[in-house]
Length: 103
Image 1 (tube, rainbow, N blue to C red):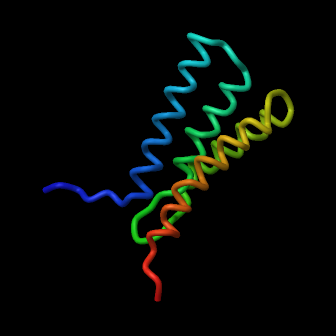
Image 2: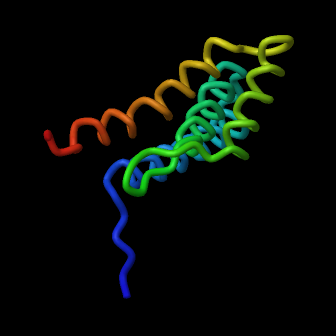
């Protein structure tokens, strides 16, 4: 039996894969600390929320996102990390809000 995946969840999964691919690109092919922070934020930000009937927080990934944000605040690139996280959280949530039927 095929499992039906909601469009926001599908977008979140694809953004996570784009984040991982970007991380590998900026790690191996074109080293850039800013690119690594952006890609890591995108990958982790997109898996913080899960989507079934509605969005719900996955505590492990939310904690991991906040822990790495704390590390970036002390030594790193927090703005790039937050930008990637905002894209990862915001784009699937925007798709969820736009596809939600009006009552």
